[in-house]
Every structure is written in structure tokens, then in C-alpha cells.
Image 1: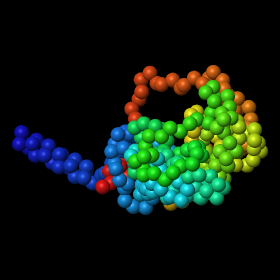
Image 2: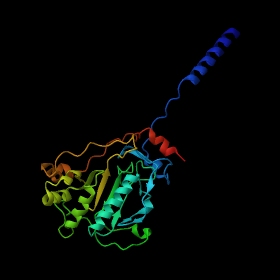
Image 3: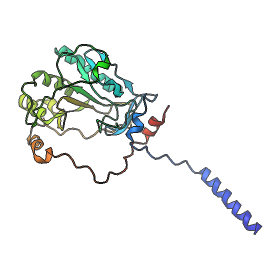
Image 4: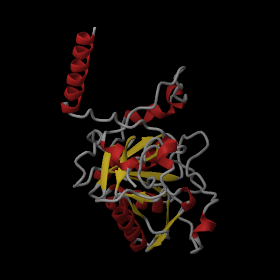
Length: 288
């Protein structure tokens, strides 16, 4: 029996040495748990990088948009969602500057991303990589007030209740000017607006090249969602397919008024586990 005991010990030692010699197994990619990402109040250190895709990604080295700037005012800053890749902050400055030069008032800038990006507990499925910017389409004059007074805002819809068109009492050519300014920015991938707004733009500007980037979507009746393409220096960033060729002023717009389009997507009967984010997001979430 002692001889067998020595053999067993030798086998165990050999297995331990073999395990130590094997390369360490990479940790599983982090789960997309919104609460984990919302709990990080500051960005990770290091160079800015957008990682993954807009609806399944994160943001390294995020930069905060100042609460006020030339031609813009950030709203609902208590959410801590005005962090982005520098390209997003440059886009805000560009659009606000051109809007001001066109005689438009200060713009209200809504959510961009959380300090480290990632999924949000409410409000958005996207805005995860610091490359999505909500710009409100409220063109009323806006006095400069402290950020705390820009938390609870009533922003009117530009669309009729049945979504058959824009509200003629509120829509003006100045709204088209603002959307065009955003859509013509070279780094922009697309601008999401309500389908009724897209139809009005098609009625007034059919054939304009910038209309290709203006895409119809649900909601978005009082703000536009500006999405950027992946910037340089972000090798793990993933773009979505570009918009189809053409101005988008075709029969596909009619679908948005069908019963199928008006029916909300059904929720899964048994939701599965949260999806996993790109591997690089583990380091972003866990960084000091």
C-alpha cells in the first residue's frame, strides 16, 4: 500500500506541474448587466477607444462633454450620460457651431454614453460606445440657466399624434436646416428621426444626397439621434452596415404607417441571459 501511495502522489504532482505549465484560460467576456456599468461614476484611464458595436459595446478613456459650450447646453446631466469618444464631442461642437452660424438658438444635448459606456438601465439599447448623440429638435430660445434647472424639461413633439405627418403648427424649415447640418458632417453614419419627419424632408428635399443618412425610426419625434462611424484608433469598434443607396424617399416609408409597423415588437416569453460584451470591455469595467 505505501508503494501505491507514492505512485498516487507522483501522479498528482505531475498533474499540478502540467496545469501550471498550461497557458491561463482567458476570462469569459463580461455579461451586459446594465447595473454594473451604471455604477461606474468615472471613465477608465488610457487613450479613448470605442469598443464593440453601438448596442453591445463599451467606451475606454471617455471624455466628458462640458455642461455648456458655444451653441449648446447639456440637459439632464444628473444621469451622468454625457461621456463620449472625442469624436462625439467634436461633432457636438461642429453641429452647434454651424447651427449658431445659421441663426439657430442654443441646442439641447441629451444622452451620449455613461462614463465607461456599456448598457444603460433605462432609456436606450444603444449609446454604448460613446458614438451616439441625442440632439433635441427644440428651436425655441433657451436662456442660460444652471444645469440643475435643465433636468425636468417639457419638449414638444414635432409629429402629429397619428404619426401621419409633422405638426404644421410646430415644424419649420429651420428644423430641416438643423438635421441637414448633422447629416452632412463627414464622420456621421446616420441620423435617426421619426418616420413622419423623414417624409416631410423627402417632400421638401427629395434627391438631396444628405437624405441618405437620415433614417426613419420609431419615436424620435422631438430629437434626432446622431450616430458616428468608428473613429481611428479604435481597432475593436464595429460599424453597422451603411444606409442603403439613394435618398430613402421610396415606398419603404409607407411601411411605417402599416398595422405591422405600429404594433410594438413582442417581448420574448422567456428572456435569455444578458448577452456578452466584447472581451476588451472586461478591462474597461474592471479598471480602477
